[in-house]
Amino acid sequence: MARRAAIVGGQALSASALLGSLAGTAHADGAGSPGHIRVTVIGDSYTSGEGASAGTYRTVQVTGADGGAIINTIDPAHQSASAPTLQALSQIAKNNPNVTFDVTFVPVSGATRESLYQTTRPGTEFEHSPQIDAVNGADIVIVGIGGNDAGFGDLARTMITSRESTTEAAYPNYLTPLQNGTYLNAQTEVYRDIASRMAEGGTIVTLGYPQVLPNQVPNGSPSPTSEALISSREAQLANEFGTTISSLNQQATQLAADATGANFLYANVTQALAGHELFMPQEGLNGIDLLNPQGSYHPNDLGQALIANVLTPTVNHAVIHELGIQGLVGPPAPDPMPLPVINTPPTANPPMDWPPYEPAPEPPPSDPGAGDPVPEPPPADPGAGEPLPEPPPADPGVGEPVPEPPPADPGVGEPVPEPVPDPVPEACI
Image (cartoon, rainbow, N blue to C red):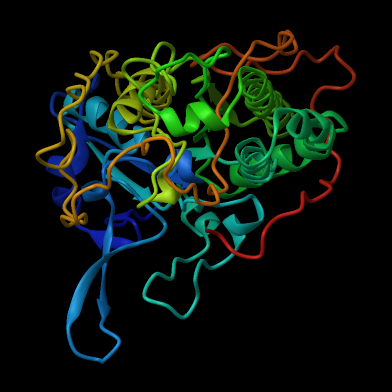
């Protein structure tokens, strides 16, 4: 299979330009025998790194309105150099100096399952090709999608702009597509399609979402405006909703594995922000940000690193599988990454050094004080919350390969029904 230069945010780079060629280790047969793995990352804002410091976002050169000055402008896709998947790959690469990783990083903040197959912002300087195209021939695909399809942004908007009683009355309407099979069928079909496009024997790593709120909203938190707008009951409903989405993503992973025979791994990041949810003393999440509403209720630099540490073992397992196919020894599990310093403004882009991302203006202040005007919240990807019933017994554990379906089970391996499309916006935001 022909290999190509790594692409990050739609820009082609030589392999040596990526973190020392995002190179990484291990060989068994023949000293110095190199490995070569092509990784594609697709998804929505929780995969793109939305909410990280503004200086980590990819920028695009845009011509001024008068046709004169060229300015570097942050791409609204908000592809961050400190996105959890990139941090995880960076750690794995450090342990594997003889393996080259070609990385295609194209998630778009606000993406839905439908928009994976569409050009984003066509005809503008911020145009991106359909994310699904980047999957073709990949050895490892990491995909985080589904939250926007489930309508978590609408639920968040209802929570913030309405009384608790209004949120509670509307909640069953948001939950219905998650309970009637609509979401599960559509999610399974996307996973199956990804498996059909990638390299034979490759691995698909599917993602859930972290819990972003505590079940009890405290008094006197670091995010007073959000504290005034979100009740404990609303936080509990949001957590239940997010956990349901993550559970369905895990079930869809198993169904797609059973139907295709492909190697699927589910990364359970539900508790990645435990102890660092919004309102905690050291928040891993942004509250309402008046200057950057798109980044509101998304992981900050600390949150991105916490998610990366939980995600790394599963991605490492995928790398081990791929190196095994190549006849090489898989890498050891990397050590956890150091977390960003708390309450200290970043002096540079967080612990990654990805050339395509140019410095941008200083990040806006975090959650404003009480009494400031509150904007319409963005359609954020969901968090996760209170535990729901355990997934089906056949569902794999975190980072463990999905077993081959038992031949005696009559339902295993049968095609998944055609999806009933969820309502989706006409454009990504």
